[in-house]
Length: 182
Picture (cartoon, rainbow, N blue to C red):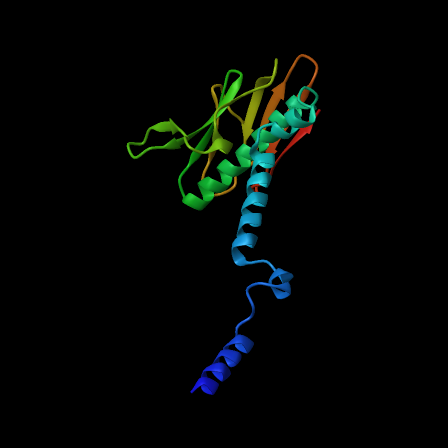
């Protein structure tokens, strides 16, 4: 009887990999891989959506504040356009004096600020930058400026200027948004 027990134990050891010893350090567990992926994802999100966190940490905060603000506006407009197309609910980019925000329709048909999304949060323009004009599908819009994103990509141009510089933020008919310093 004892011989059978020792044979079954030996067979079990040959099937099951050892948990400790030299073979244990040859790979990563699923939990370890998931933790690493979570850390990388959080870090990339902080860099992408951090609103200048990386510049403040590296000491380049004042140098590219305007460029970072323009990139944030471009990224936000692109996200609003995508969300409006995916969800089938319109989103408005509301350009008020010295700031911008995104509005969505509530169930009663009223435009309310989009809450809970840091990309679509209300933001201010840097320094003395001001809205100079907005065009949607080639037609000039009257103030107050609002760009409506819906089921299809919107072709728009937003002109922002100071006393000595001018920037165009453009959205094309494919949904891509970019900016050009003039």
